[in-house]
Length: 195
Ligand SMILES: Nc1nc2c(ncn2[C@@H]2O[C@H](COP(=O)(O)OP(=O)(O)OP(=O)(O)O)[C@@H](O)[C@H]2O)c(=O)[nH]1
Ligand SMILES: [Mg+2]
Image 1 (tube, protein in one colour):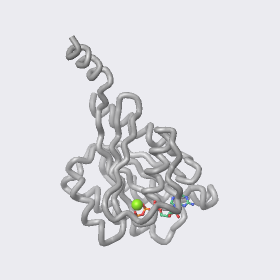
Image 2 (spheres, protein in one colour; image 1 turned 30 degrees about the horizontal axis):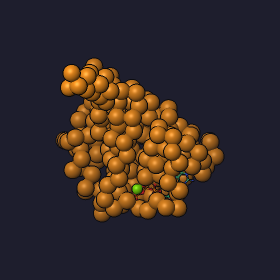
Image 3 (tube, protein in one colour; image 1 turned 180 degrees about the vertical axis):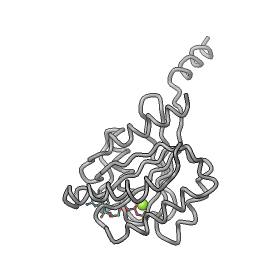
Image 4 (cartoon, helix red, strand yellow; image 1 turned 120 degrees about the vertical axis):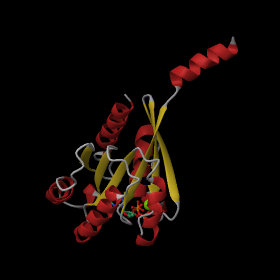
């Protein structure tokens, strides 16, 4: 009897797990955003910014939204660590790529890094790509809008990945701007892939 009841309980509370890789150049704010995402969905305080160190290994954040569980793999973005990214491509069911709104000078480097990811044979062609423009709190809104439109014109329109759901959101780990909209979009696209 207990086994049967437990079986029902398990069935109705079971979450569909989705593995998401979080990539981008070093210091763009990936880990800070992961902390903000965790805090937003589990109603806890994010780790203070000054406690966040450059990522060398891997940070894992688990976020439960309705019947889905997103497992976010946050990887280090330093040039010497980027070769590690590809170890996670095979299992990735979505990509979050972070581009810093406050550092215009690294746009081309970010574009090349993202293109390398998308060209990799182990990255599935139809998995969602969520591009987060980070640190939106640190620059005027017209600068953020310019970065978003450059991403659209110079990256997304050039991708030729017709089957890939792609979206750009301006975000801030400091004030949480854009985080819920972005993660809700991702969760929606991942759910659609499972149906
Ligand atoms: N103003 C502002 N600064 C931010 C924000 N997010 C991160 N930062 C700053 O950027 C620094 C780097 O952030 P991280 O989250 O460590 O960057 P990362 O992309 O994880 O870097 P790696 O782990 O080296 O790849 C932080 O120490 C903060 O000073 C943000 O939303 N707004
Ligand atoms: Mg980091």
